[in-house]
Length: 85
Image (cartoon, rainbow, N blue to C red; front, side, top):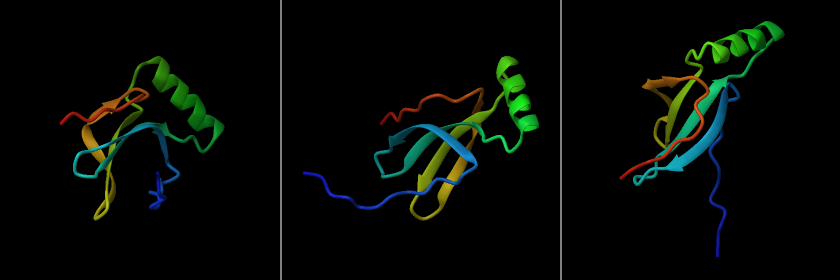
């Protein structure tokens, strides 16, 4: 049996690809890229992808602090995340 407890809103700027639940209740997510606001932004995003430049990173969400970008996790089109305990 399942029961709905609520949800975590994700800021519109994030393009989340995958999520994982940490043992302490933190949520981790891979953020692929900033959503393009214009065709020029989309062109720049394509260029960054082709050149394998960092476009995304890992995110962490906690009840007390909300979403936080995890520095040192930057990479091109982050696609997936896992938590090891």
